[in-house]
Length: 214
Image 1: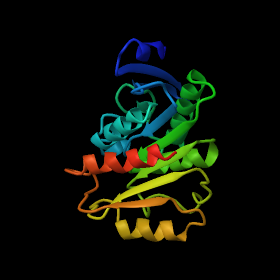
Image 2: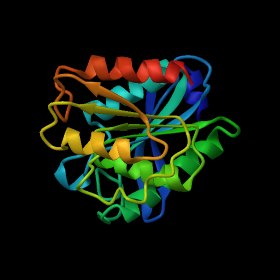
Image 3: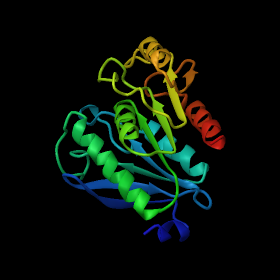
């Protein structure tokens, strides 16, 4: 299936087996010979979050530019993915299924987890359960979900937060980071709102620098 990347395609749609049926996804091909894979989780399903979100798309571009095969997917109940919203538990199972699918398609290559907003929370949940080579979280919704049990991340971890975020309180995120035994690399993007309007190139640059050093 990944031969389609070798045929020169930059991306193509996929259907992935999920725990509640099937999951709609897009494979974004690595720019060169793949160094690994990445699964990207989108924002909250009940507030318009999909795999087509601009921040999610920017994360995919950063990952493919660093020679990772990136998979974006719709959580259960979003787009043509089957199932219904499950308050984070089912969505974590969805992400684990996508990670297993990608890892089995690219055996032996390291896997990265990434997510934006609600997707950050899910990526953190998965990273706490599964072996991942690195983690990228953008605007994690600290204070909106239970982050108390998400303190055991040991892989390289980048956290990006806008200082003008109107949805997630940046001070809550910073305070949470400082409370962690193994804190992430924290990057504050000045002037960035929750959806990084006008700051997507800054977001991509920060991600690119992190990935380059892995």
